[in-house]
Every structure is written in structure tokens, then in C-alpha cells.
Figure 1 (cartoon, helix red, strand yellow):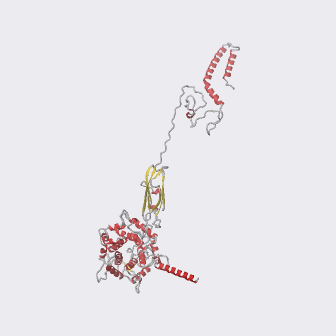
Figure 2: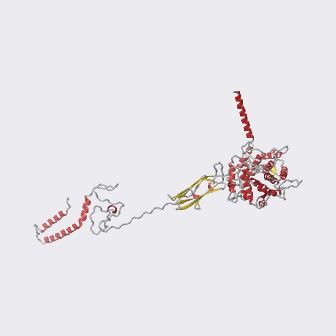
Figure 3: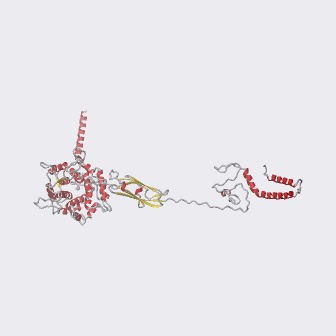
Length: 601
């Protein structure tokens, strides 16, 4: 039992030792770690600034765009950064770099330094001496701005101005050291530059932009720390960590961290500066420390949180809250800082490559399908769903619903559509037969556009026209006397005989669609139609109608004979057969009345 306890304790001790060793060797961020959302949104912005020529508007922006993208794990020679066969590097290589460096307001040696670093980041270190068009040796051009005069107090200094050699001298020299280290520059020149830079540290531990005694600032102090580390100095060096009478550059940074976790530009500044904060984060990493541990006092505010507060909806970063001058350079510098890539090691060490960021919004579904055909109705429903992220968890700036557009047959129908951040819907009515096209432009908040164009056809059959009934004029019988029939208005379809002459038999004002049934002993005719029993009155009426001519002739004869008898009676004559003529006349009239009575009455 005792042996088992000792064995368990030994295993526990070994496990704890392994864990401690792992923690001790851990870096603030592994190259394989997923990119923060703040980085992918920044990449979204960089993509939106890339032009069809592959550049970012200017060669300076293109240099920074390369540095920011590659620091984020991208590679600028991939399809993600290729537009029409042009990449950021090919755009640089076809630029007149010498002309760009000589432009008004450009710090030429700093420009060449950053361009050298961009070439290295693009994997084109061998092209540094034949850069641009026309080709220029950027290392040789950079050396032209360095003072290498023996015995000069300025030996090793890089300055953009021959008239005012102290102007921006510290800032320029720090950039030059970083470029010489990354691009394999002359070691003697590099050592001279480091020596001169060390002599520009102020008593507060910070470094100015120009030279010793000028006001210290966070940005140039952070650059100086990175330059010293790149040249081989450790974080324990008095320049960085401090010594008796010298607080050191690290102490200067700590003393100037603001309550929000960020850093100002000038010492004691009351406003967080984006560029200075990004440079400070890189310096912290260069010293081997974790930026997230640099909390302000007892608060939870860190430099990364302060940078996140300066990110715009477009993914770009600004120097200060409310600053409308968001730039590619600041965004790229911030991305390098958030990816823990100090210029002391980057771009000489690119780090691991990450999967290319899919920056355009992704349309996950859309209908109608391409070449769809509609035959049932002249109505077409256009629907789509989309996202500004990928399956591997990369999230962009999000879809800008107000920026999306819907076109039908090249006509903008956006105002009739219902568009949200993840879907849209447009109902079309009265779409004419024929081929049609619809186009969707899905836009993210950075300005990247995903376009989808499809065609569909409407082919609704035309309705068959109904043939109007043909009117058949009434048939005129050859005899004026109609033949008695049991059906007064027979239907041609039922009996096959034509309608009777309207002159000899009155027709109803309205003729219904159904034929009038013929009288029948049966109590019903056809389904759903019920009629009464046979009517004697109808038969008598028909008989009387047929006997009208006979009755008229008999009436004429009776009246004629009555008139003749009355004439004789008026003369006092006695008619044959007995009785007076008057009696005999009355008797005759009575006989005629009895004759005219119907049978059975």
C-alpha cells in the first residue's frame, strides 16, 4: 500500500513539472491560434481598399497593406489578394518607387525602410535590390540618408533632410534599423545606427521623434525598443529595463498607460492614440511579455481592449475616437500588433500561414435557380440568404442591408424589396413572358460586394379563346298552318327539328339555355328537373287553336241564315217545319249552340 502511494505521488510530481514547463515555454499567442474577430474585420477593411490594379491606392498604402495582411497570417500572392491577375506585390514592383519616395511630404528613408520590409513580407527579399519600375536598389538608396562620417556625433543617424538633419532623426533611424535587420543590410551601418539611437534616450526613459532633449513620445519609444531587440539587445538591457538613474523605456510605457488600457502619443496625454497603442503592444511582445497582462492599475482594461474601441464599423482603425481619417497604415499596424507580431522579428519571421480570409459576403441560397422556367403564373418570387462569415468561424464586418441592391432586367428594384442583414425577398407580379435577369449585390460594412446574376424565363400559355355561339335564323315552314305538336319549343339538339315560325306561334321574350321538355305522362324529365301531371286544359287549348278557322266559318253561316230568317219573320211569313218563323229561328239557334259545346261538358 505504501508503494502505491509513493508511485501516485511521483506521477503527480512529474505531471505538475510537465505542466509548469509547458506554461513557462508558452508565448502570448501561438501562430496557429485563431485570429481575433478584430483582426478579421480589419482584413475585411483592407480587402475593400484594394484596387483592381492590386494596389491600395498609393504605393505607401500598398506597403502597409502587405505588412498588415501578412502579419495576420495571409499571403498576398494567393487568390484572396489577386484581382485581374494583379497582387499587392506586383503593384509595388510596377511602381516608380524612386519617384514615390521623392514626393512632397514623404520621409524618403522611412519609405524605403518600410518598402524593404514589405518586399521581405511578400517573400521577395531577393528583389530588394531590383525593386520597382524602373528598378532601384532600395538598400543603396537607404544608405544615402545615413551619416557615416567618422568622428561625427551624428554617425549612424538616418535623416530625411539634409537641411535639417535632426528632423525626424530618431523615428527614421529606428525604421532603418528594423529594415536593415529584415533585409540583410550592411552590419557596420546597422551597428552605427544602433549606437546613435541609444544616445537619444531622454532622462524619463523615453525617446523623442527627433533627437535627444526633444519631448519623449510613446510611439518612438516603442519603435526604439523594437529596434534594439531586433539588433540583438535583450529586454534586460538598461536602455529597455532601466538602471540607476535611468528608468528605462519599459518604465516610460508603464507610466503613460491610460485608464482605458491604451497609450497616448505624448507623455501624459489625455487621449488614447491608436498608432502609439499598436506600437506599444508590439514593444511589450518584443520584451517577451503578454500585452493582456498590462492592465491599468486594478482595472481589467488592456491595450487590446483600447484598440477594439477604436475600430470602426467598416473594420478600419482610427487614431482617436471621432477621427474620420482612418487609414490603411494604421489598420495594418494595428493588425500586426493584435497578432503579436513585433517588427523586432517580423517580417524576417513571417510565422505560420492561416487559411485565406473569405472577405466577400457569402450567398448561401438564392432562388429562382439559374435558367428556371415559370409556366403557371406571371408572378416570380426572388429570395436569398447570405452571411459575412465562413464555416471555419471567420467573421467579417457583417452585411450592410442598406447597401445591398436588387436589379431585375437592369432596373433597380431595391426599394420594393425587403432586405435584412441575412436575407432578402422581392415579389414580382405581372412579369411578361420571355427571358429575364435578376442580379443581387450583397455588400458588407467594409464595402466588399458579392454579386450574383441569374436568368429565368416566364412562359405562361395564353388562354384558348371561347368560340361565340352561331345564331340560326328561325325556320319558315312551307305551310301557314302549323302541325300540332306535343312540344311547343323543341330544342334542335333534342328533336333534330328546327324552331317553328315565329310568325305563326308566339315565342317567349327570353330563351333559356335548356330546352323546354315535351309533355309526357311521366312525372319527371331529366335529372334534377321535376314537372307536374298531363293537363287537359293544355290539350283543349291546342284543339281550340286548331279549330279556329272551322268555328269562324260556322259562325258566318249561322249569322247569315239567322239574318235571312229574321228578314222573313219581319214580313210575317211562316217558316217551314211548323211554328212561326220566329219560333223556328230560336229553335235552330239553340241547336247550333248544342252542336258547338265540347264533348263531356
